[in-house]
Length: 528
Image (cartoon, rainbow, N blue to C red):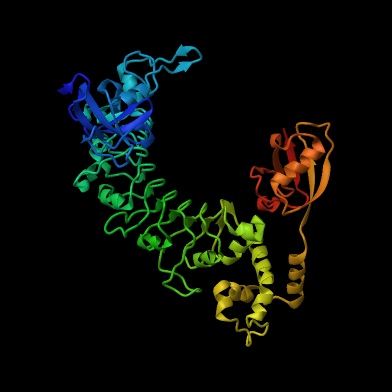
């Protein structure tokens, strides 16, 4: 039964879509100044609305944003479709109807519609074979016949329900409860109301191991409130939400091996202590979270922290970390093997991404992969030897000595270079001539001898230029404009390293050549 021909009885709280804008129904009823039934909608995009639910001085509903609400007629609102309708539309209709996409448009092979032919038994075997199903963006809002899901597609292991019209966790549970083999679920871009007793839905997620809830506006408190629903969850992707303050998970999330909090506005690095004792956590993604530093204060600089005991992979790229003291802190982690830390602000100071890479490798003794590139034994040895020479003079000034009996560098040096003593034990102390040579190299301006080639214009002669590694890509464009008579803005620049046959884009005009780790002997490719 409905309130009218086009308004569901449970319309308040339901999700709708109108002209590609998503919203939640907050009010159904009449407005004195206009006849007929109206829906009061709180839009996900507040720019779509006009007010906060108040019209002519009367508060009809409430919005979280002062311009997030408006009234629309019920016939304009799309309340969505049931789950099985979306699955059949995307993966094949019953009968000999053409296969459609989630908007009801026929899928074509050339100009002919694709038809699903065969007996009912053949078609059922097709649905039985569905292990990975995506109905993302298909306007799924509810279940029409809950029991039928387990009969039509019982073997789904991975399900993508992102960007649909699901309004609450109990609506999701009505689907997943019938999918007993479900292990991977994506609920991103759904605004899901939390029921009063979430643990009562745990049977609907009994085997769920991987969950993505991204762009949902979740806080960490809401994550913990929902967590009893996911008793065996191992991989949690909570990126791009509203998580700023963390709390310690007590009795929940204890089986997590991966936690993705990227693109959340974390208040500060002190929040991390609340998740530092998850017993099985191996991968932690903190990209673009506003971090400026990390620290583990439970141990001295040369100790190993009890925090994150199993952590093997850490991503802290796209943050505002500018000091090597954070890298020193990472050496306290017991199990860290892989680090993603590109776009680091230290490049601006060191002027060379390759130098920063070498410093990080030297400071983190157990690291085997940095920025998705494996650290070879030769690269590690070279980085550690260079580090030993680079800071040799500082070591001497701080009280270091080649005689082990007299080698007593002060606390400040040891805090800044906690692995230096172990490198001396490994390679021996640096000789005076090595330190003087290192000083000479540091003072020398780095000129790069580069070949310039136009691969799409074979008649253009090869050019050879000596360019300072501090030269920005913008200035390189200007130079090439003068040499080739081509507007600099039209030039696409890449380079190929003399050491490996890989073409690398140079697409940031504000970065110097050194940022891209380009070296003498490399070849710049110019296209337009």
